[in-house]
Image (cartoon, rainbow over all chains, first blue to last red; front, side, top):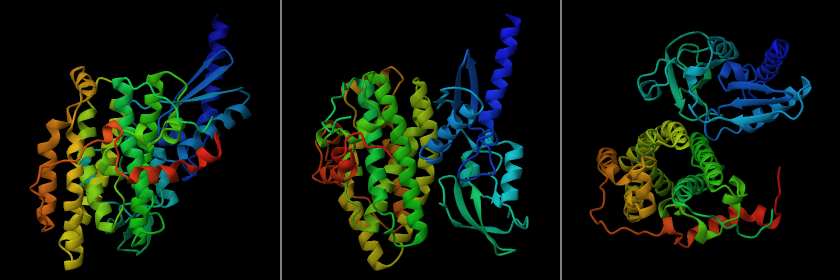
Length: 167
Length: 258
């Protein structure tokens, strides 16, 4: 019995690591673990189920992510893995890890502010330029190249940049 | 998958989810018609992004409707294999895009409602609907801010943009009453704490509208005669044309996938 449990927990860790290595197809520096999209991995005998929570309602990357998880698990030796979508509780940008925020900034995308409150979504925003670090920035377009981003510009270094919106 | 119309057992909860899913899908489809045609690049991205949010909301609600119904329907069948009389969306969302002002006024009326509606629905006793609401309310709030800024810009802009914005408000006003109507099936859901009574939100909605419209130097119509029928499948002539485009691939090549 003990050995079975140990085997299960080791299998679960291997399955988790495989799923956690999947990256966001639109922002390939972020893994789904960094994003907070990966919620749970359960192993029952030789069956693996991965639970994910969608970011934006219409984010097309979610379909791709589910497929990539299946492929990653198959490659790790798990057969016919299933991916379940969990809607509740709803994902927010607060779930993004510190590591994820750091990687985003290094990639040139300003990370979401630390609170997904309505004030952060609508109030005075001081978005720091991911290139030069200045807070003298301005909004160019509320909607950007993907659902999760807005387009900003730095008034100090004059570079335009993406901002990962609070959600 | 055949190309014939599916049948849906419309219990009150299935019908509830279908109505909101249809609102989101049809409005999302309308907005997607602007893709590549908007007056400027930022608006092309904005309208396409809003369309994407709405279609995403529709998918979650269709999936839930199919699950509650418990037969072999799914999100695709519900979207692609129901005919116009089986659609349950508000008449407002199926109205043609018209000019840019008409598109933005339609969006403004809808988003001002969706914003407070979904916020209130976060307290639903139905965990799935509460979760869909939590996501939709943030998205709707963002959509509302975008539309509100445009209403002010158009109304307080040139004589031409002012006239077009006012004409759009006058034209679309009669389609707004349906948002607040409730029938017996939905009343039962409201009593059970699953749905909320949209009638209680009308005051808040009107205040939001009045604030923006007065800043835009526009006026809200005084007439209170309202057109209804969409919730029961009685649509304007426009929805059939929209569906013929939306559904043409699945009707022509049943079961087609990417």
